[in-house]
Image 1 (spheres, rainbow, N blue to C red):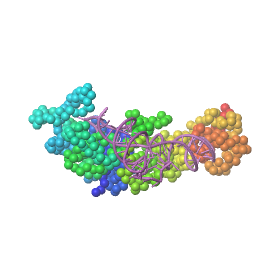
Image 2 (cartoon, protein in one colour):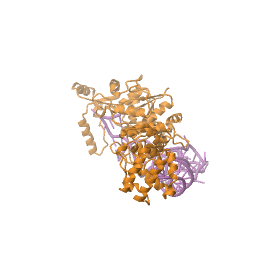
Image 3 (tube, rainbow, N blue to C red):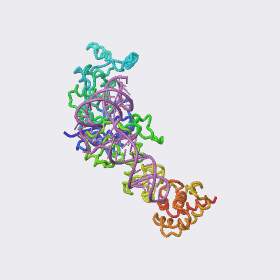
Image 4 (tube, rainbow, N blue to C red):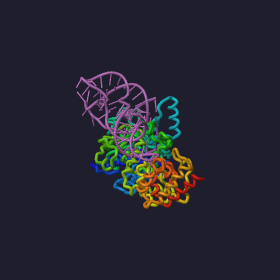
Length: 494
RNA sequence: GGCCCCUUCGUCUAGCGGUCUAGGACACCACCCUUUCAAGGUGGAUACACGGGUUCGAGUCCCGUAGGGGUCACCA
């Protein structure tokens, strides 16, 4: 039997980082077994539908390399893959359950439901539907239908006994049926709830393994009962651990975004990570290693290597804090492993997004210096954006930035004067030549490396932190370097 | 609160009854290197939640307790 897994998000907004991991595990299981990975869109809540979400979702999945074998834009033998286009199936099966006596029509209004719950709250009873319509006689039902009253279809949960659910990671989980509800299967607008749609579709689409967030565990017995009521053979269920806030205090939420130790907001959407310049390879490596381990004490691995040894049963069932710091480190590792030209190409759009016009020759010149300094691609803009700014707008840095430890304006200006002369006399203008020429002068000029290179750095970059000074100079070119040094001298003497 | 899940360093984790004086990684600290910032090198500190069992032997199995998390919609 070929393995078929699915990722079934609802298009209500951007893709959550946790959703991407759920998709990844599903994809890994299918791909590691030579099976199919299906994308299904669960848009059964008309009130929360976001028309832009589907595109965003597919973009994020493709960015991460999780191409689906069946689903929107690619089709497949079990379509359509959008639930709002499959209403007839859900209605058919919901009414089938009613005909079998396993579900019933409920005519209770939202107002009555609210009243029931308020009454229960007053008596300190747990909330829930009181099953009023479950006991309606055939005549009473017929009468309400004749009146044209709207209704929902509810599942007739067994009142006694236990529902035993199987989870691959946890074994058997038993629930007392008496604690379970008569859940709504079909809403009054004719749309199914998640519970009905997920069971019907997983069956119809021949899904063999359901990997979903463990938030679904509480409604799992309902699903088990549904599968049994239909008489269908269940897929294997795996409830995935949830990624919590970095401090472990709760789910990573969109409304209260988590913060790191510096008070910076930690993004929860995949698109935020794309925008910050995380590499998809690093992101996949990272997500795969939260809840699952490659083994051999290895933390850096390719997705192909992961596929070769992936086994769902090895997933760790306990929730985990979202290790952001590790993601940054991993992304840095992947950046450092990139070929220089590749990195330069990936960096280009980030400079452009910041409004700079990118000269690829310049970018390639400075890229090796940036490579060991980045955790994200976007950080390159803060570090080296000045290289791509219009030279005409360059303003000489202020004194206090220029003047290094144990130096003053006069000595700094003097050093810069000598530097101008040295560069002008230099036959070549590249990092190695500059380094050799300047290194030879420190003792003669009575300064140390830190002082000399420091004043030069600030003079050409106007930044205290920058890529290495001579790489920066080479990238700027000789005329611009000299111009900036003279500007600094003028600034110091002014 | 009811129900359900989970519990090894600050964090992600290895461990599936003896090889554990508990291994790796991130973060942290120190030192080295050094042109700022990084990267790199070396070293260091830090964990089996607690209490009972089972067993010759428990981080590993069982039961309690505690803690954390999830969930209680005509949302998914």
